[in-house]
Length: 489
Image (cartoon, rainbow, N blue to C red; front, side, top):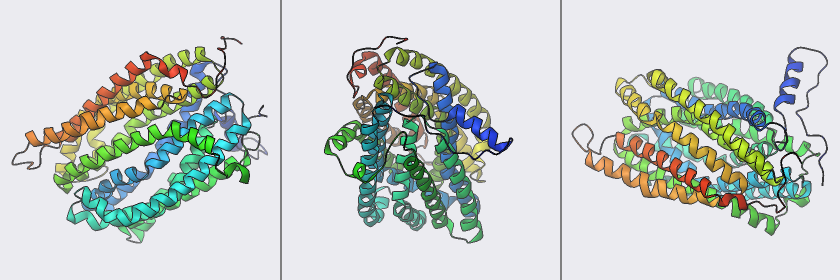
């Protein structure tokens, strides 16, 4: 089956000026077929709006933290930081569904199979809805137990509970936004999710300030602002997909589960879901260790990991870009383009990471000061940023080679590598490091244990991902079997 003209963001242009500029931006960065043209150009056109969009998404949690840290205090900031590993653990089903859907969308789009593409998207939306109900039904009654499992300090327990419960009630909005934006990106359209994220981020900032500074709702207000913003994002992304009739058809029949497609989606996505579960479980154990060191260390860690989230954006962006690029080209059976795209994305990713390392070393203190005015926390935060900074080059390598394998449909290696680097390396190393560094200043161990263990796991992951990429079995995992297509055909 063949597609019509690629769908674009509809803009009513009656003259020149701002609307004409938006039209040109959409023409440059809208839905694109990555199986044609120069790989470098395709990757950059896809990555730029995606990077800005990821930046906007990261602003959700960062603005929350800055406003809470400044208007409520260090203890409230510590409370939000305590909930994050628990929240990520409960949302692992979303990761599985989103990853499987992304691979299927990219490959079926590349193969021009509109019917299977439409059924895949419809089934994914149904699975997200069911998963949201399941997460709420399991997670909300277990909130207190999960927080106790992580040794949440007594001073922050009530705030942590309030934040986590509200976030879980909004699970369905987070799920539909992630699946909607993920499908759009799989189709090569990263500009519409960007526009949605920018709007939602602005709304989140306004609501944060109003609820926290204006209405004194503290951490509950922060969670409510996030949920409202995610609801707006979900409606806009799903609405966009339902209007893209020329590319994908979302109707009642496509929402009915097809066990063959569901099985295929889970086969592709479950390794990523298990990977996320492993990361989240290790984070829960590490969070328990962090919490045992006191709320000041938790506050510092929360601030550092917010900064880390921004530093990771280029790496995650290029990993997502190469995954979509590889998915479309594997679907079209253009392995020659996969090879060239790999070389191009590595150059971009490594160069960007080196620039980030320099910036973090130069401005780390200024960044920490955005979250707190407590000198002890600032000093500790600067040290932790310096420890982590060198690891971003390693993460760039992991994301590129991991993205290539995911795009090709080979999602199992990431799971095994994650198990090895987190369960086998990071968690044991963090606890051992803390045990041997106990002293008068830090009775539960030095905070360095948290960050050196993370750095070593990053470096290990880069080595393992590269070795598996070189092994080459990912080339045989395509969902679509055809004879090789030569360059230029």
